[in-house]
Length: 94
Image 1 (tube, rainbow, N blue to C red):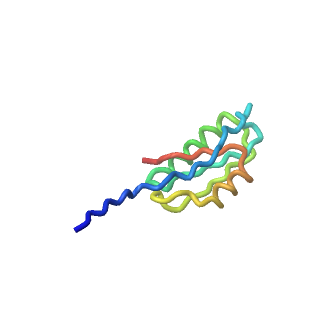
Image 2: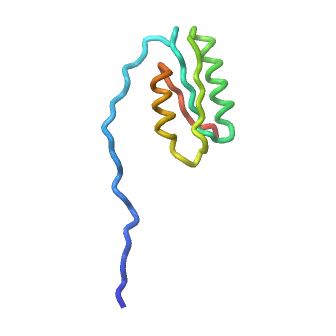
Image 3: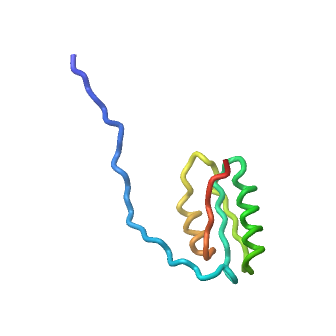
């Protein structure tokens, strides 16, 4: 009898990335909000948007939803956010 060992780890897909230049202000900018779909994430991002709107004169707020908390965000959603928003906030809502 032969024992076969499996190694269930795959190599990571690594893409080089760099940080975007920091904005000097959010005045006149479109803020993107991308909640992670957990129970409180929509409410948390709504509150973040309101607080930021008190401090800056935003041109608008774009909110998108990734669908389900247990899955990665669709690349199309991220591309749309990158096109339509000057800055994006995403995060957890636990």
